[in-house]
Image 1: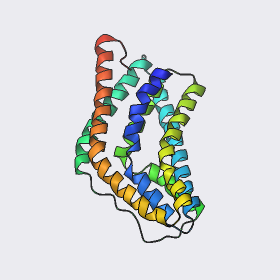
Image 2: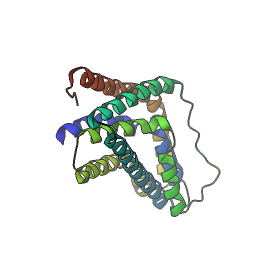
Image 3: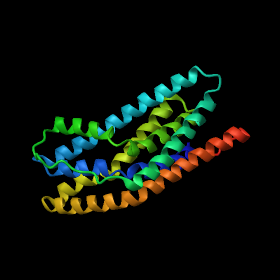
Image 4: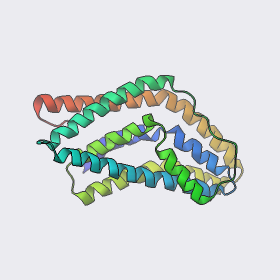
Length: 221
């Protein structure tokens, strides 16, 4: 289990460089119910991310059951994800700036949960590290309950840094809007620089891991 988390943590770091979610959290924090709505967006995103992970993992396992070597299909999937990560990492150097909707500042908590769920499916480049994490969890050959627990833990760790938005809103009030906008601008600049590098590194690691397995039959991760 420790070895699995040593693999998942670097992937989680790449997954966290997500300006899309933070931008929508900042938007929610500027609505009529800043704390409730920002928490609702984060909750909706986390639940949708977790459910999507379950659906994807079940789909991969069903594919594996129809093949003679389920371990091999995990590495094939990892290799393909690695290639996609490299390609998206290259393309993301030219990523267009994310525009944030500012037309309305009225948002209900239920709408905010739905908004968070929608955000979780936006921007394929930002979801790719999650696919890589799922592949690593499946390769670990855990019991179903352990796998669910690891996936839940991954999603909780993912959500924790973004909880900064409602926390700042509670502690700083109106001043939090200026602070959050500055953090959002900084995150966009950082993600423009770091995202291609992190995606490429995760992609290379998956490709190397797959190639070592195909050539030697041994696992690197």
